[in-house]
Image (tube, protein in one colour):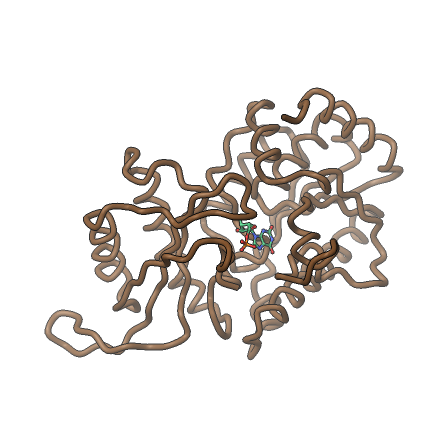
Length: 311
Ligand code: XMP
């Protein structure tokens, strides 16, 4: 098991040594960038500004949580709404790898602009090992280009600092718990809901998926152990319509896939096996509360062969 004190001491020393000016921390509110922000708040607080970009593809709770994080750790923090820009960059794009790269690039453009306004030369990212391994940085094929790796332009002006590069998710969790960081409940991908909307991403689809996501999160988190403590629990919006009935009228609505998944480190794992009654309540709530949806399916694919996210 990783020696937390040694890791924290070495990372703080690295931050002080490498950050030779002002920097911005790319904060998504997820486990990795939250740990990075906390480590920065201990060692280089005066030199950093934490930036959360609202892409329009985040959950409502992400924005609330990030504001709390900034205030708890007295970090200078900015929440920037750039959703128009992300939706317009993604217009007409359906290929998952292209989506990820566009999102990565758009993030960097926004970070470069804000860095230039703030006079910052460094970009601090919470990239961890699976991000660059799955992006093809190791000996393997590209499984998926993580937005914080695959979208980086070769001529990026900002100097990159990534102190968590060698960690795996379970180690990030362990360090975060040891530091008493208010547990981020589950991982959330940097490209956000974009990789959970199969096909073209639009604001309307993101709004629909956000409503379903809230229901899934609420039901799992209040299930009192019915599904244990899954690694991740979320929904995916599928790119086709099917026939159904709403009231006594025909509907031609959207389908969501539900993914509830057990894993130790995110690199492999198995689908969670909730009771039929839990799944039935979940399905009934989704179709009652989100009128755009008339069909709910449950994903029973392990990793491998499926990845956890669908794109
Ligand atoms: P996959 O889908 O590759 O996911 O089995 C493994 C873990 O990584 C998360 N994930 C991402 N996290 N940027 C991130 O920060 C990304 O582009 C990304 N893609 C997947 C995923 O949610 C799971 O926890």
